[in-house]
Length: 95
Image (cartoon, rainbow, N blue to C red):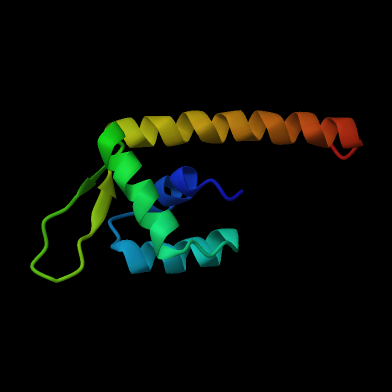
């Protein structure tokens, strides 16, 4: 999976993170390295959709948090992906 939107939402599902921490987390759990342009483009789109929000911070780095709407979207997408995996596994004879 390499959809930056879903990767960012999945990264934020367990707590607030700033951009660099998201890049590192995504690299660890998905094996995908998002470049800064891709990451911050996704962050901008997610903020515009109301799926994440910036969290106030005294530090230079700005952390982000997933919103309730973002969590619902992530849950819907995970369910859709699980259905695809189930069908693919069945068709390959591995289910």
